[in-house]
Length: 422
Image (tube, rainbow, N blue to C red):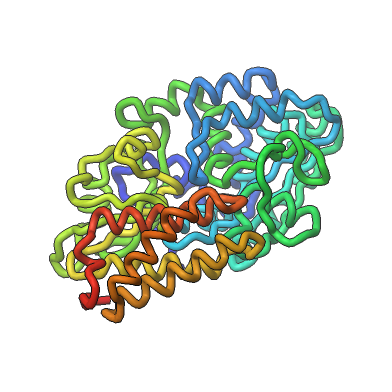
């Protein structure tokens, strides 16, 4: 993958060219790196309150307030705790975390160490998809630099115990990014998700309290501690706070990774920064936050791309992935591809998920290729009614969501014996 095009109008906080240093700690520090950690070490009790005032949300999909997770982990009286940076990133259309791990590993490490200071954790693990070989290499080199630096010694002093940094390749499976699956894998098992509670902050890796945050979430933390909560909030549009990395792909002229103010409109992302549609085609729909959410259409181009605004449109911002579809492209074909991905990514411990996604993918393929009959459509509807909530994680629910959304938004494409362009 080539380095993404970052538009000049973007607020380049995470993607600032001055920060694209790779594993070179002295250069990172000369560029201002370490200032956020210094502020955290000076006032460790103020870290979580600062994140609360900044309204930092989890950037891995859910948009959960970061300070709440940190507060829960900090409240545990255990002497041993983990902080885990989730860099598994294996969902179609999402490619933000690999960029941060490859080009700005030190801001990710600094953010994770600030988390360790805030919750008094002595073990920090960077959980990285093994398919991202450059990201793993850069993180390992960067960790070696931090391990030998005075900065880590300062963190250990405040935490009260020696703090260790480890890079751990993930299973490379899609389901391996779910937080309880992360715990299972780091404990030496297969990445099987489990039901919650207990949550990882209660009982995580090795039974110890474990704080798990997405790579992008942690990358924001040093800048907030360095510049303040008001500064971060002012980066957003309207009531939204901060910036967001948008993975833009599909039928646009300029696909790539864009850092823009949280609250930027979908229309601006697609038609200004993305350059508009390929071959002058009309905008048809977009899979938001990856392929497991409700589709947005042309009537939603005015939506502000922040967690709350997208939720009001009955969808989710998710990871910030935006897969754009043009008129003339079959929605059913795309949904069939994504549900097949979910079927192959299912861990298999819940028969309703493994078999249900497989059956949905088979039915969708028949309909998309013009071989479907009315019974296939009825069977698909039946599966959408009985499958939600039947798995130990949200994989089956996400698959059902995108099928139901496409059925509701583009019902004509599901008519039996219809043929569409793929």
